[in-house]
Amino acid sequence: MAKYVFLLISMLMFHPYTLRAAECHDVKERYAELNRPLRVDYAGEQAYLSVRDAQTEAIHRFMVEQLLNRLNSGLQALGDLKAFTECVQSLVPENSVTVEVTNFPLVLPLTPHAAVAVGYQIYRGWSAVPDDRYYFEAFGEHEGKWRLDGSIGSSFDGSTLFVQPIDAGKSGENWFLFSGIRLGNTGGILHLEVVSYDGKALKSVWTDSLPRVSLTAVYRNYILLDGEATNASGHYFEFRKRLDVVPSGLKEHTDEPKR
Image (cartoon, rainbow, N blue to C red; front, side, top):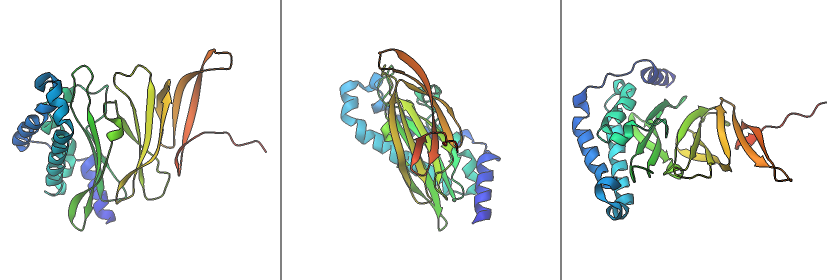
């Protein structure tokens, strides 16, 4: 198992696969066809709202099927998962201009497990204020066959979303920090979530929503937040807060008392 996991990491990080255009031609045509009813500018608002949930799930099933097909086609295909995801969605132009909204598509090894995480978004809604649906999914190799171990991300629908690895608060797990702000929301509420993978499933470990706060930096074992608040006199002041990784998720840092 250890040799297999090492080979998996090597394929993902050091040997990117060169994707041939023909490998996703039919798939991207089908994806664009499935996505069309979710584009308000094309379908109209009423038509969009009537099919949004069912059509989103149809696209999700399609994406999972395509990713599993590539994973089960052999280890040599692992290195191209990100390129393949980008190719599949390439006929939906909004998916190529989302760098300020998300760091998806994203592919990350889930060591020490024989597993990989894939993050992608489904564009939907209005061009001015998208209602995108996010999927962060764990795929694991079990008894020689890849399967979907879990999916998470719906709490960030219609928001920005950035996912970054952090140290796990529990042994044998992989942890990730999710952060985002609701699109079109002028209140500046930062939503944070810590997600774990234990080799079997994805789950939410910790979550919080913080007004007038921005995420300044993410380190392996802590994060920094900058924000503003009011004192008893009603005056605004700025502050910096550190949250440390702990077994329950994230916890505000406090200095140890002097002895």
